[in-house]
Image (cartoon, rainbow, N blue to C red; front, side, top):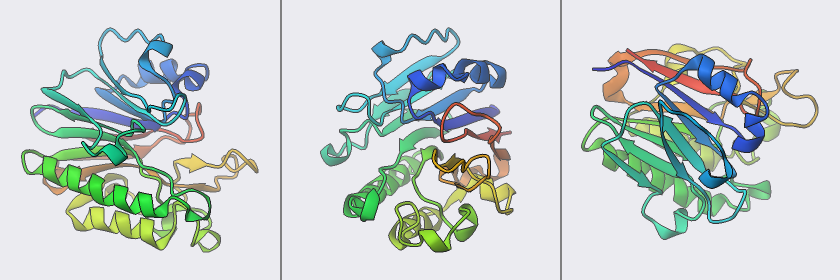
Length: 252
């Protein structure tokens, strides 16, 4: 059993983030694996020399939008892109790596959008994604991470009352996360830390980050069977470069 240091980060544009210290952070942390969301680029557009890492990119069909990437020191046995469902595989939102001991999935969950315009689609997505990770779990444990675009409980955002029917805190999206937990997955940060005011995303407006008026919408989630190996789970709000900060998990 190998230890694992995993970082997940919605970089809100890998090219922009690279101009704001991405590589310094990456080299300093030296993770076994980093999972990125909202890369907003194709591999050819980014000059990223990472000799110790295998790179996997899943860009959206639409240029400069969405997309995910994983850089890993451990060569996977197998790699798949998307969920294998046409409706869900246009936006580069999922990469799955099979490693000897577990599967690692990075995910950028669709936003329900203003007035919950995309909520019906989001509900179909949540169901399909949960089915994907449960199916993987039939063979070996799963670690999935990314911007899940939902604050699960009131403790997970600064202003729950004002946001009750807003995207990211609708009853339907929160129930989607209940289903993940109910299916036997662990929200690793909450496994270690039950305290409030721990957020991973802040609006670019109104100086929200400096005032810590934020949301916890970035997660690392694992199968129950990995519980005994969980060493630590952290949110890294001191790291800038995106409107999200990185989150991490260490397995012993």
